[in-house]
Image (cartoon, rainbow, N blue to C red; front, top):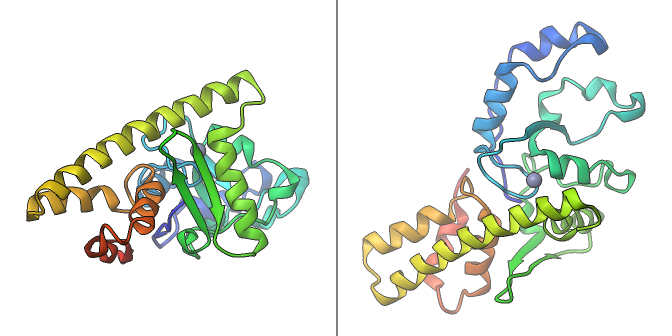
Length: 222
Ligand SMILES: [Zn+2]
């Protein structure tokens, strides 16, 4: 999970639809377009990009008729994949997930792709929201308690493996020849708008001794 820059004004349909109460829709085309753009067409939880099953996710959920005032609130709408939207639909996550449009999740959780091809999400502090967000992101890659989830986690891990392979290849190329072009290629993969950015950025953070000159690219202003 990385920081997302939510743009304003909010999509115009939200105010119109909110006036219709529970008959209104928070799925109008302008909402989808703006969410896709702001979130770089990535699920904010697993960071899979180019979603075929993107959904409007309510950070503060509205099931059971709760928080109906937040149903059309632009600040409460997030772009997510169906798999993560489904995983998050549990009471323990309610109100406990980091708002990546307000806070920088990279300051709270650490996303690790290990050399044994596994995904580990660690916390950087003792906050409950850090712990629950790390748990949720970890489940997106590792929870295989149903056939559907086994399939969804495999798809995400395969996509993550491919992205990390390309990243490591560019990094290796840069190590062998630290010219401007190779630096630019590495940097382009470290941007928060790229797929699985948190994993690549944390790799560079964790290898700061090897790449002291790349640390500044993690301070991207978004
Ligand atoms: Zn997802």
